[in-house]
Structure formats: C-alpha cells, structure tokens
Image (cartoon, rainbow, N blue to C red; front, top):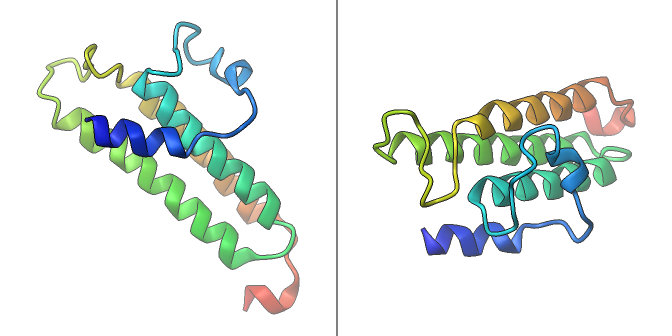
Length: 122
C-alpha cells in the first residue's frame, strides 16, 4: 500500500483542490487514499484542459488514464475484503468511486463536446 500512496502523491496537482472535495466529504486529508486518488484525477483533468485546445488524441489518452485510475480504486476496494467496501486503515471508501466516476463523466463530456482542429480528429 505504501507504494501506491507514493505513486499517488507524485500525481497531485500543485494548486489546492479542497473546494471541489467539499462536495464529496469535508474530512478528507492529504494522507487519505481517497484524497490522493482524487488529486491524481484532478491533475489529469488539468492536463486534459491544457491539451484539449489542440489535440483530440492526447485528450482521449488522458481520459483513458483517468478511467484507469477509477478502475484501480474499484479493484483496490474489491480486494480489501471488507464487507461494506471500506477500508478505514487505508483511508479508502466506496463513496469515492461514484465521485470519481462523476468527474470522469465531466471529462468525457468535455472531450466529446470540444472543437478540435480537423487534422487531429481523423
């Protein structure tokens, strides 16, 4: 688990994103795995915002990476062995899955509604 936390810590955005997390759960802290997973997704959302003005392919790759992060949370909780899908020791709960899926949906919507240069789409 410490390797996962270290990896997630390297994928955190530089700016504060607690205002977005308030809609999820206000008690999350920087050492909490839910917080780290969301931070990784937020960093990728920021990258997607940057590349969406010029590259459909890069944006779709970022979206696939966000989907992989969501899948990682699902697998982590499935393997936790906890009947309610929460692991207090890891700081991870099932509630983060729906929150991250909603964020993934926002990113997918942005990708599908973006106006990309025609040479990159085909």
